[in-house]
Structures are given as structure tokens and as C-alpha cells.
Length: 229
Image (tube, rainbow, N blue to C red):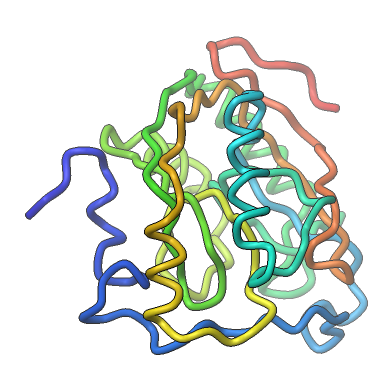
């Protein structure tokens, strides 16, 4: 059955679906990963920041409820990833680099298209093999539209299908699927929807996978652009 909240596209990929769920969680190894960044300093993504106090409080409560399973990530601001750009560099030298020129072109496209604010439905926490998260609905295709615009300028760096979500945390120990489903079932639903009022281009230190996000560009989602920061 198709869901009306825009979350149907992720059904069947998750621990919540016992027929196709992973057998157990995938433990995240928090290390430098030099074979990935190859000396490059920062990684760039477009995100919707979570700024509502009630939703931030909910994220904190859910992280606390799953604290024995997840790596703590107090420095990483809650957000919805919209588009993964790649390594932030002045000039593009590798296929997963994202140059300043490409960023300027994406910014110019946003000025032309003028994306507006949107309210997105949220569901009870669910989980991939690697991370617990809050599902974000896109029933009206707003995020899909923004991704299409950004992708018309630069290919996205992505190894899996896109699923809009707010990450609660990466797993720090292996846990079986039944236990994960029981833990998730005991959690409460989000008290509010996500009110997306800004779209940010942010970077984080490539050597610090759970480090803080640094805002580089900000678009206010009411039709008026904020100047680049």
C-alpha cells in the first residue's frame, strides 16, 4: 500500500520491514580514513538545518534513549542532507571534488529558481544497518525538486539511493534485528513536523566524520536570498 506522507519510498530498506531488513547493525569505525580523503581538508553538502526547539529537544531525547547503541555525536548539528557535493576545493582535480566554480553556479541557480520554505512530515524513528534516524517525508516532491536543480550543475557523490532523514547516530556495537525493532517500537513519534526555512551549503573536516558543520552559504526559504557568508 502506498503511503500518503511521502515516506513510501523507504519502506522495505529498513529494520522496520522484517522481510527485507538487515540481520544486524553495522558498526561504524570512527577513524581518519586517509584512503578516502587523500589529504583533502573539507567535505561539502547542502542541508536543511533543524532549528525548531521542540524538534531539537526530541532529537536529544531519542539519542539519549539509544545512547547505549550509538556513537555520541554532540558536535554534529541535526539536519537533513539534501545533496552531497564532495570535497570542497578551489579547483576540481578528482571526480569527487566540488569546486568553487560549481558552488557559484548552484548558488546562481537557487537565485533564479527561488525555492521557498516547506513543512515536511516526520515519522517514528527507524534504522538503516548503519544508523538510526527520523524519516522525513517529501510527498510534494520539494526536496526532489531541489536535488534535481543542484544535480543539473554537479553530479552528486552518492553510493546508495537517496532517503531524506535526520540522523540520530551511527551504531557503535552490533545488535540483532529483533532487538533493534523492539527498541525502535518503544520510542515516541516526533511532536512536530519539520519546518524547513533555510537551505545551507556546509562543510565538515574530512578527518573528523562526526565533527561540526561549518556554514558556507545560506538560502532563506521565503524567496529572498541571504548574502553568501
